Length: 251
Image (cartoon, rainbow, N blue to C red; front, side):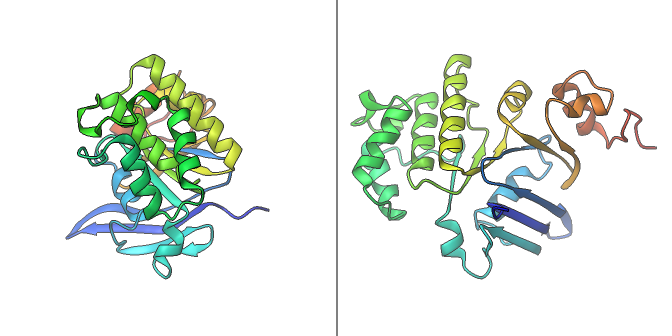
């Protein structure tokens, strides 16, 4: 069996006396898109920041293709990339300069060819010499995604990747990310508050509440297991309180 792209074991994070992430365990396999869902404050971004090595876990283990990030951080993270609307690229650099800079950081082979592929993939050719700081939020999102795919990561972390895009552009970007991910056999961890997007994109979802994974399953069949009509209804219910199978709330 192929090795998991990501394995998270008993991942825990305290901020002082506050427990933000509570012994979370999950895997992401190759060719798998996993949705990490939950209301604001559920622990999603904290988990992503620990996987990226930005935050140190209080407890637990993170393995990227079997490499423990606590033991060999550089080798683990060279297999990883990330995009989020709250992490824009330097605004004083052009699109091409940003892609060149980050490609050099990741030591990408055949970098100029990879940049051209990324520019083409996200329709950025007319912006190649435009400074990122003057681009619209949607255009900046596409540049960030192009950057995130430059090094052909084995693990791609996407935090609300289409939040600033209009519906047509969001659908196009989702399709391109999905096609690229399948072609490269990468694993994706995808956060979103757009439940229609999650149903369309994700193979599996994890519902977080108060730092714990409460539910896990296929986004297209999971709502019915809890007596809900769709994923949005299930999301709202999980945000309020944990559920028991069959739709009965816990006492």
